[in-house]
Amino acid sequence: MISLDISASVECRSKHIRAFSNIVDQRRFSAVSACEEPAKLIHSSTDPDLTSNMFKIFVEDALHEKMKGNTGPIADLHALFTGSVDNMDAAATARLRQVLMALTNVVSQLDESYKQLVTSILKTSWLGRDALFVKAYVCFLGHLVSAHTSYVPTMFRMLIQYFQFIPSSLGRLHGHAFVPRSVMYDRVHLALRYVLDLVPTSYSALLAVSVQEYPHQSELQCHHLAYMHNLFRVSDAAPHLGGRILNIIVDRVLQLDVEIQIELDDMDEEEEREIGELGSSSLTELDTFTSSLNRLDDDDFSEPEEESAIDLNESAVRRTTANIKDMIVKLDCMLSAVFKYLCPSFSKSSAMGSSVFVFDSLLHAFESTILPTFRSRYTQFLVFWAAQSSPQYSDAFLGLLLERALDPTKSQTTRQAASAYLSSFVARSRTLDKYAIRTVIGMLCQWLDAFIEERQMECSGADAARFGGFYSIAQAVFYIFCFRWRDLRIAQEEVSEDVDLCSAKFRWAPGLTVIQKVITSRFNPLKICAPLVVNQFAKVSGHLNFVYCYSILEQNKRVRAVTTSAHTQSKLSDLGMDSQIEGYFPFDPCHLPLSQMYVRDLYMDWKPLEDDEDNLDSDTEL
Image 1 (spheres, helix red, strand yellow):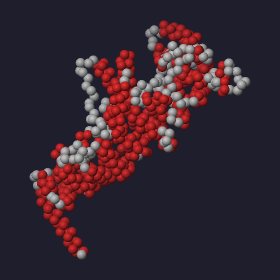
Image 2 (tube, one colour):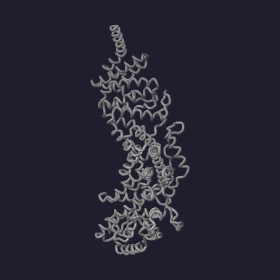
Image 3 (cartoon, helix red, strand yellow):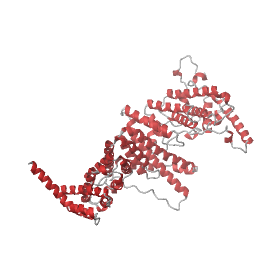
C-alpha cells in the first residue's frame, strides 16, 4: 500500500511537471510572448489541483529566473496585478487568487529587491472582489509583514487610504457581485486586525501613517467624517491606542477651527453676520449626512459631489464668504462626530473605569494641543462637556487650570491661557456648585494678595509685560464675579445667627475682600485688563455695593490722555506699561448648530442685573 501511494504521488507530480514544463523551458530560454502563454495554459486547465500547482511552479520559476538576472517572469507577475479591473471577471479573480496563494508560500523571498512587485500587489483593487480572494489577500498581507517588517508602513498606507469615503464603484466590479461600502470598510479593518495580531510592534507605525494620511483641511467633509469614523473603529479594537487616536483627531479639528478664526479676523462685521447665520436647512442637511455616513448604507446616501462651484463673476469677497461657511459646516460635522463617539463613555450607564480613561485622554489632548493653541473657538467645548459629566472630572479640569495659571515656572503665555480657560469655565459651567466656585475664587484672591505683598515694592506702575500673570488672574476674578456674584454672596441660612450680613466683611465669600486691595494697588489692574471686562465689573460691583471702580477708571483715563500727548512720536506699546491683555474667553457661546446641542443644557448664559435688564440683555455686554 505504501508503495502504491508513493507511486501515485510521483505519477501525479510528474503530470503536473509535464503540463507546465514547456512554460518553464520557455521562461528559461526565451522572453517571447512571456505574458500570454502562462495565462492561456492556466485558463484552459480544468483541474483545480493542476491549476494550483501550475501557479506555484510559475511563481517559483519567476523568482528563480530573477536571481539569474532574467526579469521577464517577474514582469509577468507584476502585469497580473496592474491590469485593468474592467477586463477581469470572476474567473480572472480566481486565477489571481491562486497567484496570491502561491506568492504567500514564498513570501520570505520577497525582500526589498521585489519592492516593485509588492507595491503592485498592494495597489491592486481587492475590496470589491469575492470573499475567497479577500481571505487570500489578507493572508498574504499578514505573511508579508511578518516576514519583512520593512513593508509595514507601505502596507498600512494602502489600508488607511481606504479610511476616507470609499466610492461605491470599488464595490461594483465587472463580473462580480456588488459589495456594499460597509462591507468594504469591514474588510479593511479585518486586514488591520490580522496584521496587528501578527505584528504587535506595528502599532506605532499605524499611528504614524494615520497622521500622514489624514485628509487635508480642504478635503470634502465626507472624507473627514469617514476617516474619523474609521479611526474610532481602530480605537475600539485597540483601546490602548484610544488616547493617541483621540489626540490625533482633536488636533485636526483644532487646526480647522483656528484656520476659520484667522479667516474671520480678516472680514468685516457684515460678512461675519452673514457667515454666522447657519439656518435650520443647514442643520437638517448635516444631520441627514451624518446619520447616513454612520450607517454607511449605499442605498441611503449617494456619492459625494465636489464642492458647489461658485459663479466666476462673483466677487472675491463672496467666494471667501462661501468658503468659510463650508469650513464652518465641516467643523460642526467633525466636532459633533467626536461628541457622538464620546457620549457612551460618559453616560450614566458606562463603567467608571472606562470613562476615567477617556477623560484622562481628553484632558491630555487639551493640555498638549488645545491649551497652547491661540484663537481656538469651538474645539475646547469637548472638554467643557466632558468635565461636567461628573464632579470628579470638573475638579480635575479646574485643578489642572489652577496649577497652570498659578505656576510661576510656566511661560506667561501658558499662564494667561490657563487663566482665560479657568475664568470662562467657572463662569459658564451650569453644573458647578457654589462651593466649587467659591473655592476657585478664594484660591485666586489668596494668590493675588500674596503677590501684592511680595512684589509691590518693585512695582512703579501698571506694566503688562512684567506682571502679565498678575493681570491675567485679576481679570479672571473680575470676569467670574460678573457671572457668578449670586453664588459668591453669602445667604442668611449659610451663617450663624450672630453674623451681621450687613457687614461687607461677611456678606461675600471668604477672600473676596482682597479685591479692594487689588484694584487700588500700584499694579492698577483696571488699567491693564480688557476694557470690556473692566467696565462690566465696575458696573456690577458698583450696583452691588461691593467695590467702586469709577474713580480709578477716570484717573486712568486722564493719565492715559496725558501719556498719549507726551509720547505722540512713540508707540504706547514701546513704553512697556500701557498695553492691555486680551479679553479672550474660550467658552463664549457656541453657535455651531449640531455641536451646541451637546452643551446647551450645561451652559450658563449671561444673566443681567435684576434692575438693569434693559441695558444688560445679552452676552454682548460680556
